[in-house]
Figure 1 (cartoon, rainbow, N blue to C red):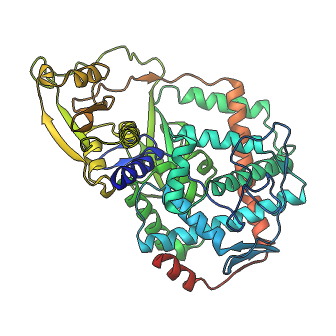
Figure 2 (cartoon, one colour; figure 1 turned 45 degrees about the vertical axis):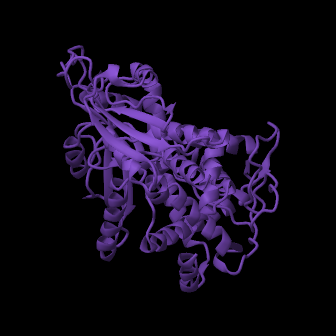
Figure 3 (cartoon, one colour; figure 1 turned 90 degrees about the vertical axis):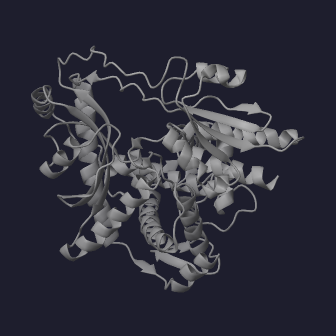
Length: 498
């Protein structure tokens, strides 16, 4: 029972990470990255409010339920990590946030990673308290319905369920309330920005005309959908440290960490809220250093850190559109991967002993389904099999077997797949088997750029202006806020021991 339970927990963590995006030597998927609560460990669901910045119930709230965005000093558990004006950040809240970040990071953090994550998380928590204080001053409210919608988007982005997320978080010692509280702060801040700047931001017809003209100028160039992680260099003497930080983030992503999580957790550009997605740009539109880096990337590839205006960037290429008018109907021929009637396959067996209780069988099948969600290649399947959590599983490369030599159920499962895909898991006498096709995937369909509408251009210009004003607004709020941190070396040591 212990093996199957551990297996299910481990694979649930893999599934929560989302499908891989960057397929190069290591996989670098995207996924959102949450944050945490400032209340003591809840004995029962907390009321749906942010006064203090508390967690709303995990179940859907009535449509008319409204949470008042207020804050007050948190209940300290053991000690206070920091204070922001009259708001306390408890050690419990900070530990929950760190546990949350570690649970969904996609890699196992080292002791040094945990120290860095803790510092970054504390920075982000302090910003959230500043944001909530400003929202409280403006009497801004956040409804549980809004938070539930954000949670649903989070689960959809990760191709996961609430049950899977709760299981992963519980295994890491974190609570779902951490995610809810982070979303409360995020929604409150968005409303604060709207309250502060919406009347100031004016997109004129002339600005739209200019943007439309520039879009037309770029119509005959390749367009790229880009994701970024940006770390700012505020002072020249910080450059080396920031470079080391972004190189460490790159290393974690190439080791299997989630780009979207890293972006949400660490990136300092507004795109962080979208997992680093900055949308479509055309060749030459970005700063020269960034444009040059993107132009060298293949579809789905992760680049290396680039120093550009304001700091260091880590870029990834999500998608590409060909210049306007390109003929994309030419189909590239693919060579057969083996003799007729064969397929190159890899196999992962999740063993089951004879007379296995039905509950264990069901748990193993669920784990196998979760493996299938993230095993998008034979290399990915082999990497998953090497995870210590899956100790006891058996991975094999089968070469090019005759399909007629396979078990009939495996043949049926493979008949529903395309090149490079994983088949549905099949329960056989030895356990649950997952087959992945190792033949080369067909190249992704090429798409052609289309000129945006005036409304799309207006929306983009509006968001760009809001983003610039938001960064300046936060700098001003920080300058006027009293932030005091407690000495935390003992807390870090205690966390590492645990």
